[in-house]
Amino acid sequence: MASDVAPPPVRDSAPAPAGRRTTFVSGERVSRTWMVIATAVMALASIYFLVPVVWLVIAATKSTGDLFSTPGFAFADFNLLENLQALSTYQDGIFWRWGLNSIIYSVLGSALTTLVCAITGYALAVYRFRGRAALISVVLASLLVPGTVIAQPTYVLLVSLGLDNTYAGLLLPALVYPFGVLLCFIFAQSSVPLELVEAARLDGAGELRIFVAIGLRLLASGLVTVLLFAFLGSWNSYILPLLVLTDAELMPLTVGLTGWNQASITIPGLQILTVVGSLVSIIPIAIVFLSLQRFWKAGLTAGSVRG
Amino acid sequence: MSTSTATGSRRRRHGAVSPWAPYLFVAPFVVLFLLFLVAPIAVAFVNSLFSRQSSGLGFGGSSIEFVGLANFVRAFADRDFLIGFPRVLLYGAVQVPVMMAIAAFFALLFDTALVKGRRFFQFTVFLPYAVPSVIAALLWGFLYQPSVSPVLQFFESVGITLSPLASTVVLWSIANVALWSLVGINMIILFSALQSVPREMYEAARIDGAGEVRTALQIKLPMIAPAVLLTTLSSIIGTLQLFNEPQVLQTITSNIPSDYTPNMAIYATSTLGKDPHLASAMAVILGLATLVVSLLVLAANKRTTNRAGHGL
Image 1 (cartoon, one colour):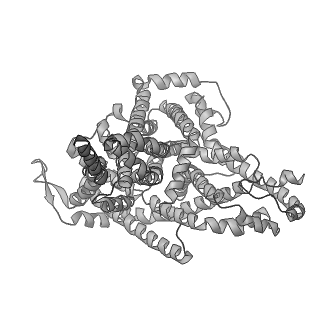
Image 2 (cartoon, rainbow over the protein chains, first blue to last red):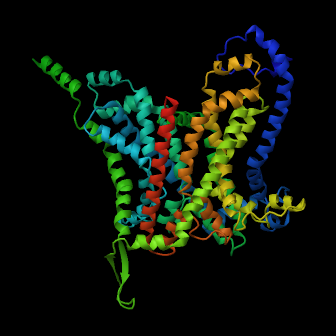
Image 3 (cartoon, each protein chain N blue to C red):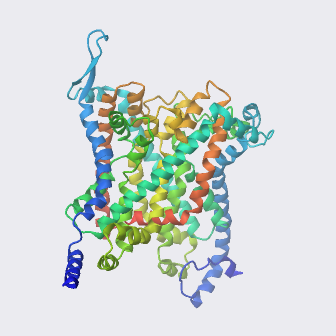
């Protein structure tokens, strides 16, 4: 029975010393009480974390009337399909346009961002050139620049460049991702052997080819991490699109849905559309994110050693 | 002859790689960096020194004129803008430590193997992180309205009337949204820090008869304390930028004015007030304030790590 309670050896712990079993007998009762308490505490806590999501799922199945007149956690008439249909047809299906925009900003944006970060980080790790040290310090220093504060000046700049209210106006500023450069630099230092680059050079390969064939390949798993972070950053971005975009056709989901939420004060039907739209917008990102945990966890560990 | 030239050129390539390659490689980043990070900062500084002056009775159009520090004087005379700073600092000083304490508590709990169904609970704590902060604010916005919220209705039915949007508590309702979103990711960071600690470190304590709880409090917690402190401080800096959650919740309550946080004031001045010059001055003030706080935190962190003998 004691073996049931004893914590499983998580790591390469040596075989338990002979004395351990005897001392554990006295600890066993304590452990079991604590186990019940700990699990109960977690069960209570998980209610807090799940309530908004569960409510969202249930609310998305209700009609506007039922949303206000039936208890929040009880299903009413199943109206999900009608809601989805209303979501798809409202303002000629602008919701899906927003979804497409979010995907363009996030997928295209994060792919380009990752490429820029990769080639910069790779160059910093593989080459010794004048200005390298300065560039590294500038990248480090720029981590101190708060992104949202420069949103307003960036907007002013985009207006003067004529890029406000365009896809490019939102995509280009996102390509500057100093933390991504830093991650790529760290990854490249540890995973691209200089000897291999030398050998490729001796074989007559050009520098760009070496980067594409060797650098990108060796950095691949690290790049997925940068890609994910960049993707999340774009998917969640709010203040810059709010400033830069006035054309509803160009808006991402975050801006579109909050606009609906605001308008729902005067247009009651929009409330349920906001609810359903929120649910629909969360599902794909939650699946992507939770299924790729391995990669961003690697990024977190790499990020924490930067100090 | 031809072979010797070939080896010669190989030598050359081997020794000094085509000298422009590294510059071409970093060029895209450097150009974008100058355009969208350095230039906006410069724009903010320059813009903050100018102002649009309407001439005559407002019919003759307007011109942009150099006004020196007048915009800064106006920003510092704006009580609502200024009060946003202590407000977000208070918010950060409460929200972040509470969040980190809960995250550390969960991480330690998960590390003890005391919790049954650990993977499920880790999943539920982490799930909110996959919800964009704007959507999270929308969601909680519904849960804060008595007309739709099952949570408020539940408390009402047991005789407790909650009004999370009242002016006295709305700041903490905003904090709750951030807490809900971010406990999970911090829990994961601390949990992986704990997992990377060699098990032998607390084998000894266990042999000496220390239970899971004592091991957690007396051995594990001190080990992750520096990481907790560092994350706490950098998160407090982040709260200076508070925008998304209050901006979204603003639409459902009049208790969050449009200049509730410094960043909201900048946004409102730029869009509603149509005064990008004043907004730039405010952005410069917020940026410098953030920089000062960050440098203080870095200095404090250096001191603590030096005292501890080794860096993180």
